[in-house]
Figure 1 (cartoon, rainbow, N blue to C red):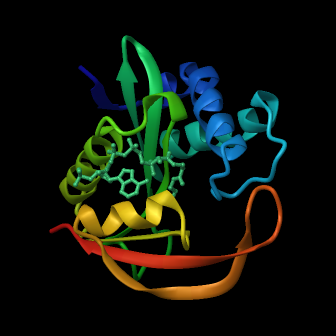
Figure 2: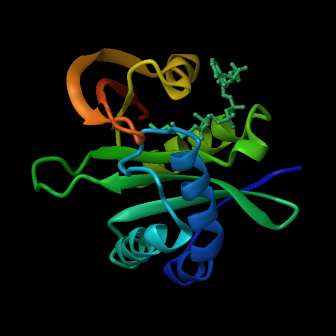
Length: 172
Ligand SMILES: CC(C)(COP(=O)(O)OP(=O)(O)OC[C@H]1O[C@@H](n2cnc3c(N)ncnc32)[C@H](O)[C@@H]1OP(=O)(O)O)[C@@H](O)C(=O)NCCC(=O)NCCS
């Protein structure tokens, strides 16, 4: 059975090696999540260090999915920083290692992320994802509303322009 849990800053720091493995696997598997190929574990480490600091600053919620004590999935909710958006959260980096996909981990991570965000007073969550990706097909199944597509928003990790689809969900 998978375990889904929220990490403290200290737990996030300790989890960096596992989180690097998940992120590197996703990027090298073709996921457009902010980084370019080739992408190594060492490339991922500064990113996860910055996430652990954001957790320490209470600016990010970091959730992980564990199977047999090993982290194989993760998601974040970043708090919107502007004073006029205390009720908004940015859902980020839903990542499941390729070896653990198709078993409902993303659904469990998203459900807990939405609950934890709502418990902290968030009423609206926003996310964006690569148009045409596996992830784009998943969010409507989880109750997210598709807003629209921006062309040429980012690059695929192997290169080439990639459109991005924006979604939102009310969680109050
Ligand atoms: C997107 C991703 C997180 C899904 O993880 P997962 O654990 O395999 O997803 P789940 O098994 O929880 O599936 C969630 C739902 O989506 C559906 N689904 C899963 N993969 C799908 C696919 N390729 N196409 C269509 N639907 C899919 C499942 O059937 C399930 O729906 P249901 O619960 O109504 O049956 C995973 O593929 C991934 O890490 N991709 C790379 C990173 C990425 O692109 N992240 C998104 C960043 S915005």
